[in-house]
Image 1 (cartoon, rainbow, N blue to C red):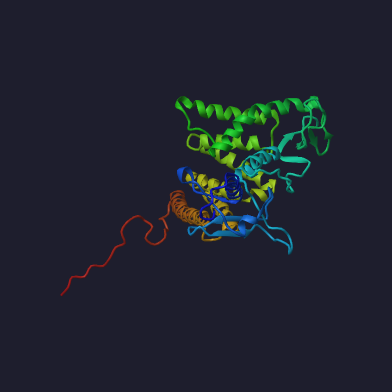
Image 2 (image 1 turned 90 degrees about the horizontal axis):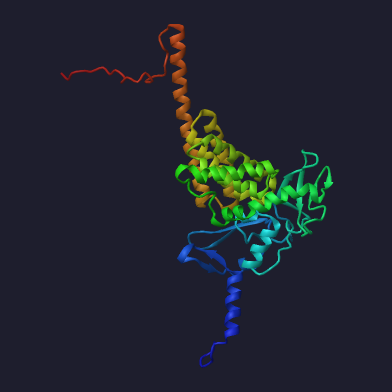
Length: 355
């Protein structure tokens, strides 16, 4: 404002709103802030973005293409986080309306069927029934559409939607807290409750990439990482397979799931586990380099984990080969033929006394 002029409250409020709606979040907790970049702040949102962005240590805005972008095609980024991009259309629109004050009509949100709400068809038992995005009366037919069977009746879909509604608030709490589960409490109550939620979702017919089923798998995997690592690994594999089929908007989520799976496999430590860990972490590193560049901390973390898995695999293989040689020797009754220096004894050295 010019010197001598009083502050115009309406103009100040407008400037603040412009800042809020066009800034990029930076920092967490009490140090949370917003940053405006002249060109980058003009980028439009899409729930199926063709570009990814991050800020480096110097607070520079780094933009990467997620794939091929045609000349003249608009470059879009997500205003939502990786978890939020995997939520249903209605939820994504609600978050954007609250935080950015607009109704999203991007390519994904304009689809008539919601790929984040997938059920096993109650009629044929084989096809996948997707929820219709448009709001329908509770007693209306066609709320779910199966590709082989077509629109389903209100009577057929009622049990599925009732369970979905019952689990919805719990699943949203998992997303909002950015944590898959509360810590396991004394007696395993939290763990048991999480497993019960997962079983309820599976039994009700939530399947594939349904966002509530994914939240339940994430919670159960986190709750059983220590107590039942085999089960946790199985759940991570299921989550990764579902996200891989969901579309390009899950690429960041897939990369992070691959890292989590690789870490779990390394901890289990079998030869096949370590082979899978090396390959899985290599794929994660490639994706993160494409998304954020090879100097980004997440890519470097994936590359480090891949190297650790490869070294551990080499050690396990060497130990396995020595054990196999010893077993073969016992069975044949012959002296062992082991690699040089592999007997566990110090190599003999000729000692010469100085004259």
